[in-house]
Image (cartoon, rainbow, N blue to C red; front, side):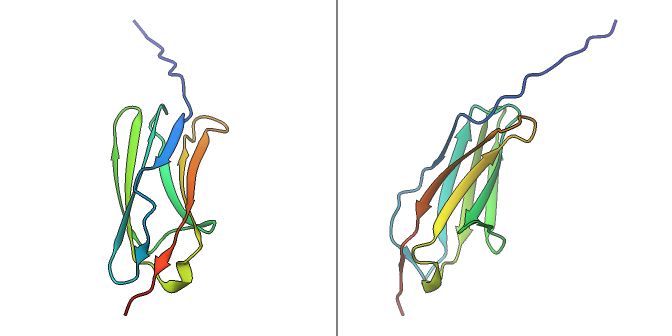
Length: 111
């Protein structure tokens, strides 16, 4: 007996940066959380700062069948003030299966 299972791919139905949009400090590492749900298979989350992938940060992810969470820990500089932070959810098995949330960040400079 041969069973052919054809699974349906579903795009993410929502993406949300759930961390409050507080003033970020240059004195310590900052943590921002993003969550997405509704995607099958689970969406892959990518963080962008002013349109560029964030590479110099720690990213921790958790995933279930239809939920993905990502915790971004980064150090900001005064130059980051006013930049746009984006959390993008992508299901590569679903054409056009991308959704995102964005926010402008504000940096407090302290010595």
